[in-house]
Length: 187
Ligand code: GAR
Figure 1: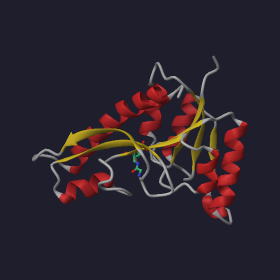
Figure 2 (figure 1 turned 135 degrees about the vertical axis):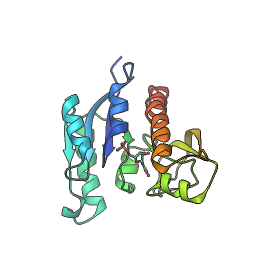
Figure 3 (figure 1 turned 60 degrees about the horizontal axis):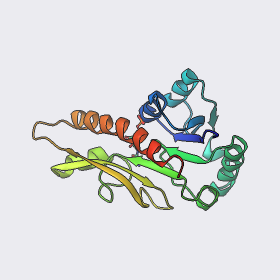
Figure 4 (figure 1 turned 45 degrees about the vertical axis):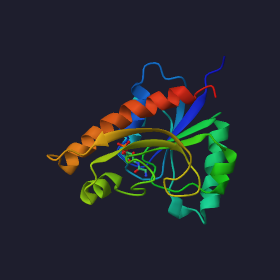
């Protein structure tokens, strides 16, 4: 049986990318990292793992449809069938969504639909909720919307700092995302 080929899309540090790469029994092969931010440290991580990087600057394209058409061409050329968003801070448009229907998932550091968008951990921390968490979901054209695949709660402790909460949430992300990916492979 041939191995499923996947791409990770990331814009930042890449700790989730690293967690995916470190999963010893990952049931797919990450053949491409797509990054929209010049200088993002995820790029160095990809080089360390020998994963080819496709860096692009969205501002150098006339439209989202134009850069997504290029991405689709490169992804298909690399045989990619699944896309894992891991801190990719950009909304997908119809060009990408239609080419990879039901094959793009995202991880978000809150219990969606609570606290979508940027700085979900900070939003939860300042709101005073007692519980937040992590969501893995299929994406659509919204901001952190789309059918939910898995969620895990993380309590906000009375003694918490935002940094401490972030660490516990990211620990959950790094375990949950590769697990969910493995569950989805072959479907
Ligand atoms: C992660 O916490 C991820 O859940 C979040 O960005 C962070 C990226 O960290 N994604 C979103 O907020 C999506 N709306 P990383 O670069 O270290 O993986």
